[in-house]
Image 1 (cartoon, rainbow, N blue to C red):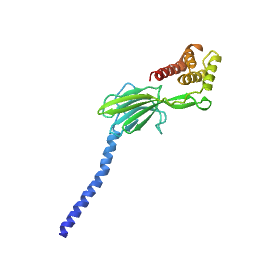
Image 2 (spheres, helix red, strand yellow):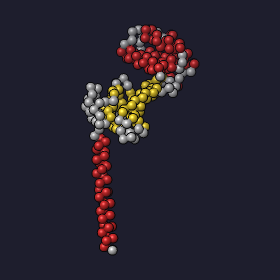
Image 3 (cartoon, rainbow, N blue to C red):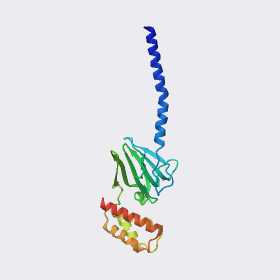
Image 4 (cartoon, rainbow, N blue to C red):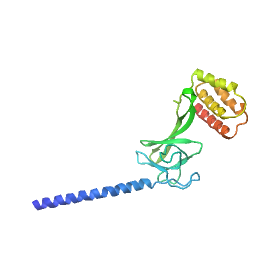
Length: 231
């Protein structure tokens, strides 16, 4: 009886030892599987090696190929694609004009579009979440939903009046102050000022022909205002 007990204990110890030996191997295999996820080939980015992979709580993994503003912290990214791991087609491409922060929230990947907007003390520009796109799944189907951040701080009546007066007395010609002004007109417009909205539309002709950075900024803000009105 004692001999049988000895053999039983020995066999049990051997099984436990084997399990302990297999755990690190499984762990390495699991990590290798996760890190082997690549982006699908596309015309938008060079190569398919993922810069980072986002792991969702439902087991789905999404690979990102693109350009991070900070390679160390990997906080903000632009000009990038996303691919569901194992698929040969990108979800989409986010262009160079966008600055985004990505965040995993359980079974959803959040893509926050960041825009510098003038509000707060002395109407200084603040990095602000303008919109958030949600990427999630229903079975094997990839779903997307975009929502605007309607909690962006608005101007009070005194701030709106100052912006309107600044526009009315501004001299012709394009300079850095005009870039600030068009952004202030945008915030005043979403704050509910009809006069500011009128001046925002007049901006494209009041100071001269828009080109370069002035044209890009105006087109960007015009699209944002249209989205604000639509949603």
